[in-house]
Amino acid sequence: MALAYRPALLIDDSQGFLANAEDLRPDEVRPIGYAALLRLLPDDLAVVAAVQHAMGLAVGLLLYALLLRLGVRRWLAALAAAPVLLDAYQLHLEQFVLTETLFELLLVAGCAALLWRRRPGAALAALAGVLLAASALTRANGIVVIAPALATLVALRWREPWRAALPAVAALLVAFALPVGAYAVWFHSLHGTYAISGEGGRFLYGRVAPFVDCSKFDVPAREARLCPSLPPDRRPTLAGSVSEHYMWGGDSPIWDVHPDDRARVAGSFARRAIRHQPLDYARAVSRDFLRGFAPTRRTRRGELWISRWQFSLEYPVYLENTHALLRRHGGHRARVDRDLARSLRTYQRFGFTPGPVLALGVVAGLLAAAGWGRARRSKLRAASFLFAAMGIAVFGSTVLANQFSWRYQLTLIVLLPAAAALALTALLRPPRE
Image 1 (cartoon, rainbow, N blue to C red):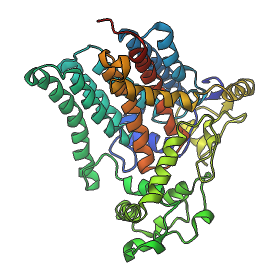
Image 2: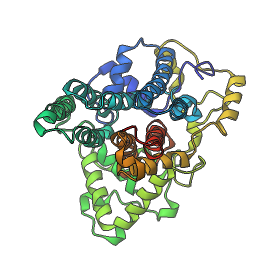
Image 3: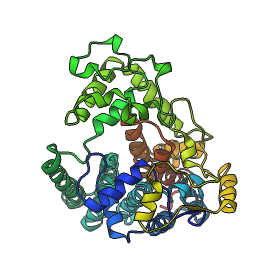
Image 4: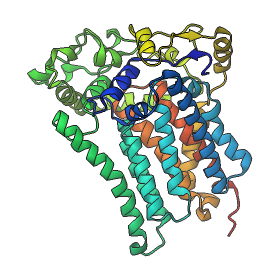
């Protein structure tokens, strides 16, 4: 992959991360975690891509080692680790200057720290908290992962006196809260609000833009300008996506709002739309959540084009200044090995993780966590829950507040096969006790 498209691949977000790495302070759109990694690496996009491929390999190896330590059979552990190592969409995304690979590594490392011992002490709990905090500062919706992590730690220490378990629980919460809280204070000093991202309202506006109908409820004058003027089936798209157009399109009504108020007014409008059209919102969210478990991967009308995440026979150019950025960050020129690209394109037609495999991870993981059948006496219930619940939390929070993208779905191929392996072991293997 690294030889097929050199030095790396770029989209709009990539440009923002590279700019933030130079400035290295809280950005209104993107948390600082990935930019900090770019700052630590040589200013060479080929090196960035190579490091991300190494991170992908590390995720697979860490999953395999953790599953073996928890008692999963070797062949099953290898199957659970295979998607992150072999899924063509994962390999393709690792070539982009984007957060996903770092985010995945931090999530899996946090899970490993929490599960490495049957009863994690304060040190391992604190390490898990720091790693999960880093994931939240890499992608804003990573903040939700503290909930399944805390529930898992409580379950692992449940049978002990509360005084024995309290130091580990406190260590997890403090180690998570301190970095996130410090960053929120830093963000406030620059942008006037305590947060880790200031554009949540804008993304939520994009979430409701495909279905909102302002004729169904009263809209205050300050928000009325955000009402789409065309009916839902005729609304314009950007890169195939209605949401993308209303968030970033040049003729989106969001540009009519003063920049200082844009995110706040957009968020207020979106929440008003959700309150008055709850069924439409629920349908949109549930449809997009279930999309993550589809047997095949294709684009539906109004979605971001999946072609962005598929191998091309040409070097893909998504930015007008792509070649200038390549020269600036490493002095490279864009190159593609067509023979390799053609082979990768052919492989991608079948070399991806089918959605039903991921669905198995959710269903089996939750059944094992609930103690169904033989799992009732298994020591893997908490681990099954952690991977299944973390996958649901991360992907679910994405589609709750943002549009669906196959890019965001890739977190599931890291977490849910491991949940399936743990759950099947708990459900089918007789307890050793």
